[in-house]
Amino acid sequence: MAHPLVLALAAIGAAVTLHFARAALNFLTFHFIKPTRALKAYRNANNTPTYALVTGSSGGIGLGIAQELTRQGFGVILLGHLPDEIASAAHSLTALNPAAPPPRTIILNAETASAESIAAAVASIADLDVSILVNNVGSNPVGEPNFRPLATYTLADVDAVINLNARFMARLTNQMLPTLSRRPTHRARSLIINLASLGMVGLPWLTMYGATKAFDFALSAGLARELAAYPETAHVDCLAVVPGDVRSQGNSAENGMEIPANAPRWDEYGREIVLKAEGAVARGWLDMTPHWRHDLERALLTRLPLSVANKGMTGMIRVKKEGLEAFYAKRR
Image 1 (cartoon, rainbow, N blue to C red):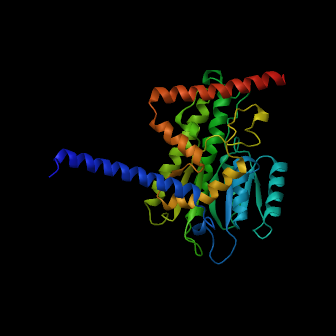
Image 2: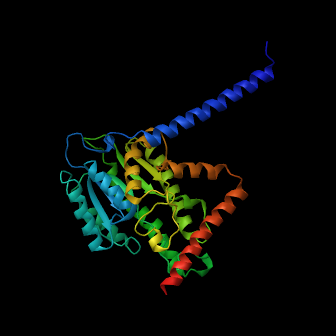
Image 3: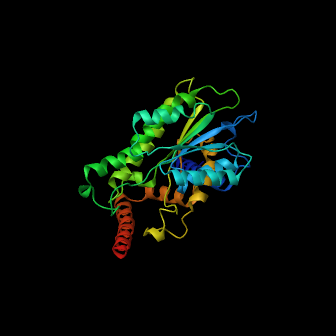
């Protein structure tokens, strides 16, 4: 008969092997098996129009999300602060899928929006059946250079980052909850998607940006648990998205940003969010990292010794910071 210690070690080894096998299978199925029709639980079964409100949707990831939602047959409400860009985005969605419900638009500056203007914006779409809210809007709205120490920020800079990335998202979600919480007649569920960032771990020279993204992540997780705790809101799912580097109009080498060549494009990334959100919710996750390389980076970051992770993060952001500074210098 085997020694008890040998049996115990064998059991531990089997458990560890099973854990990693399950994690690998989950990773592969989540990232590489795509659904034929996304977000089934969040669309009306009787083919009446179902809408999604997407903030920051005139370009970048927000527009990518809006495009895929349109392909999937949802009507999209585009929210942004530049009328010409929003009109152009709406026109592109109509051309993309003429069979989808026509897009609607809301012109609102998320950085400066008052409580009254947010409430009015929500009231303006009360005639629509909105089942999805995507809190995408966010950036680092400070004067150049964008990557710099917190001590160099003005108080207006501090407020601008908080207002755009945190306050607006919290206020809009608060105002949209009654709409999303109404028990749907022709569909199963409603969904809130909140864009956080890998920067939420805390990055040098992006201190305020990272802090507000950590706020978004925590609000999303807390709200997900809160909604699930009550029968009257248990049908509302809440999911955070944690992106890494994504190539977009404002985040590209042409604008001085050091972006990895293999980083996903904004439209590819938006598509991944839409196609994978329901799978993440079905797995019981409160957050997802929809691009497989970002997912590996995030997993590695949590497993590295802290000293190694700190050095790596600082080095990576330093390269981006110096690249931007060189770009600004050439432009002068």
